[in-house]
Image 1: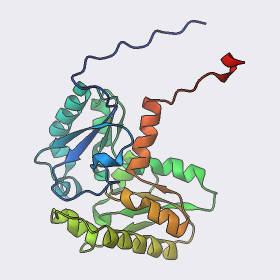
Image 2 (image 1 turned 45 degrees about the vertical axis):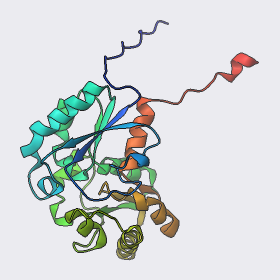
Image 3 (image 1 turned 135 degrees about the horizontal axis):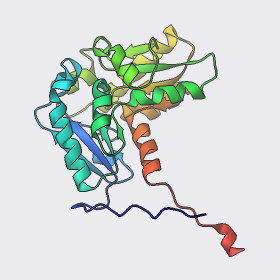
Image 4 (image 1 turned 90 degrees about the horizontal axis):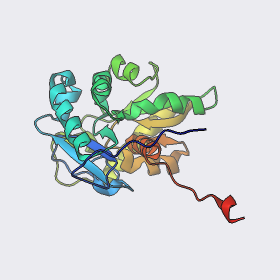
Length: 248
């Protein structure tokens, strides 16, 4: 049996990074666990900020208007040598088909992409609950572009709560304890309203700092942008295993 030779490595100005992260133009403090905090990642990442494109431009506006800037960010990240790309806002699922069509490397735009897999793992009578930052702004297209079904139960972060206020006001210091309490309250309400929820998916890319607390409090599996990117990374850089049989 013959195997094809490995692809020649691409020339690159930066070495040692596999995943690139497109970050919207924000100033708020990001806790460890947040997609745009470098300490979140167990492997080196390369960030690219899309200047002038704010979260409200993607959530309340039309992200398609900024596609040229996202294409530039993809070009820059691929030019540094990354093998996969993700984003800092799950609402970019609205333009996932366009970004996927343009990108020459795998691109994970939203943690919503994990919903089909999470549903397939659960017992048949259970469903997935989604924590969202802005329920009114989350359209059917976000789910369709992620391969997810419509009509799943959702819990929304309060508009004036510590998380959305923190992001909206570009606050320089996050209150971890207050934000965690808010997330747990949202999940508790969801589970009360829909007891058949068997797993949680966090749409907002700023929520992974609280995934462990959700799991510990409610005993449910939790999927977020970090779990999605770590899954993507596992495919881009599979673990190597020594062949123990050679020593026998």
